[in-house]
Each structure stands twice: as structure tokens, then as C-alpha cells.
Image (cartoon, rainbow, N blue to C red; front, side, top):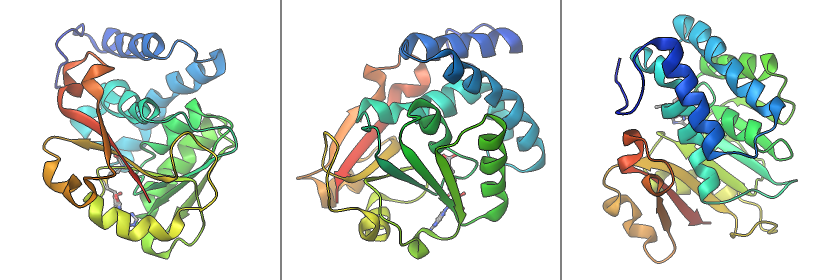
Length: 224
Ligand SMILES: C[S@@+](CC[C@H](N)C(=O)[O-])C[C@H]1O[C@@H](n2cnc3c(N)ncnc32)[C@H](O)[C@@H]1O
């Protein structure tokens, strides 16, 4: 198992360390939200043993590498209540499910071209009682609904994503940033951001989360 620098080394302690990191970074989480987050480990461990949605050797890092990473999007924008957000290429529900827990008054639509991954996300959302999420098994190119924002992690280069989701961005604005695309990205980004250099905003997650995993992780916003 890949270890974070400051983590303890037995499995239960690792998980409770990661959970307490989330509570520390997001002190406003309600008891219900914390219970939903706690429930994710057993659900994903079980589903992941049947359908691979997270690298199997990374499941013990679920809370840091997947849940907290997904919540990194909140560092770019706090979606207003009543907003709608599509997660394109959600796989088993990242970043869509952690964001739907965090923003219970925002409507999320999770899309993936692989049906069995969508089934995992649906089962997890149902088990934790999420009522602000819908799912669709389709390619992003086929989805015609309108949203305030599209979020995405580890799906395709920014230019390709922007090309696919431009049609899905609603013209009416209700958030602190103009509607557009918010992506979680890692590593060297200069080349990908080049076509959007006058508009893209990038933030480093290492400025918000101290764990080594976030050293190279970024959130990129592009108005569309
Ligand atoms: C590497 S996985 C990432 C999954 C998830 N976002 C995560 O971070 O765990 C990429 C996902 O994007 C989906 N995908 C790729 N191209 C797509 C498209 N054009 N429309 C819908 N889903 C797509 C794949 O099916 C796959 O589940």
C-alpha cells in the first residue's frame, strides 16, 4: 500500500486519520454528511472487489486520494444552492459523489460511457441516501442537458473536454464565477492550458491540503 508521510500504519488507524483530516479541512460538515462519508469506505471496498472503479491497491487511500481530492473543487468555487453540475466521466462517482455530499442543495448529474461503473455510483448514492444525484450511462457527446458547471477528473485533456461540454453550459449565471468547466488535474499542465491561457485559472491544492499526495495536484477552471 502506498503510504502518506504522516499516516499511521495499521488499516483502521489509516482510515480514521484520513477521516479526521477531512473533518479538519471541512469543519462545517454536518453529522449527516460525516456519516455519509464514513459509509463510503465499506461501500467502495465491497463494490471495488467486484467492479474496478479505483485502483485496488489504492482503496485504503480512499479518503485522501479520492474523497478529499474530489472536495478540492470546493477550493475553486462554492456552488450556490440551486446550481446544477455535471460530472463527465465520473467512473464510480468521483468527484461527483463527494461533491453531492458536500453540496446537498446542488443538483449533480453523473455521466459515464461504461455502464457497470455507473451502476457502482448509483448503488453507493442510494446506500447513503443521496437525493441530489442523477446518473446516465452515455458518452458526454450524447448528453444534451444544460448545467451551470461541468466537473471532471482524469478523463481527457482540457481542450477535448471543453469541446464536448461547451453545448452543456447554461447561459444564465448564478455563481461567483461565470459558468464553465472545473477539472482536477495533476502534474505539468502548461501545455494543456495553453489554448485557454487568457481565461484559465489554476490553483494548487498543496496550498490547501498538506498531505504529500497533493504536492502536484491542481484545480483548473475555464469559463465556457
Ligand atoms: C480514468 S477514469 C476516471 C473516473 C473518475 N472520474 C475518477 O476520477 O475516479 C475515466 C472515465 O472517463 C470515462 N469516459 C471517457 N471518455 C468519456 C466520454 N466521452 N463520455 C463519457 N465518459 C467517458 C471512462 O469510461 C472512465 O470511466
